[in-house]
Length: 201
Image 1: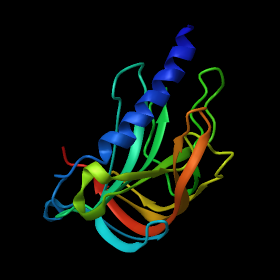
Image 2 (image 1 turned 45 degrees about the horizontal axis):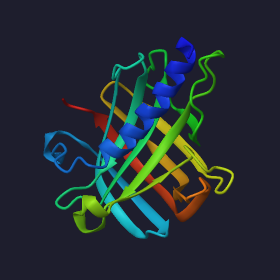
Image 3 (image 1 turned 90 degrees about the vertical axis):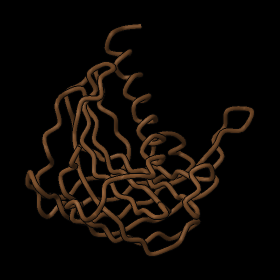
């Protein structure tokens, strides 16, 4: 396996780990410690009006040198959802400037020049704070032919202290049958507004 192909495989693995790992964080920082805020509406197979905390951060998690930048949203006491809008690349990712960005799935191709910034979206429904029953909806890692999905992120303000804007996207939950075929089990529409603060580690 070539080094570039190994990097691409590692990228997919990291995306999946982030999706699972972020939804299992029940502690989270306190809004009283300067965290931002989000308000959102969920419709479809999950419905509700949600508020919560919002932050952003970027890092290099290691592995094959994959960098990421992410907006993260969740409520608490109990936690009923988590949501991430993430960029990933083999190069360092600067904080996005104000503008309109696609939400979907377009991983960087190690064989080509860097393309447009497409945010990968994950919405995790956590019924009654039960992480063991959590259901994850995402914007296009697998089975996109069966369920075209995605949307738009609009960033209206971007500074080292805060990033604000709005979002709207469709995400899907799926599984695979014994033959390896994709089986859709639900879809949601998520829209909202946010004012995120830089994560305090």
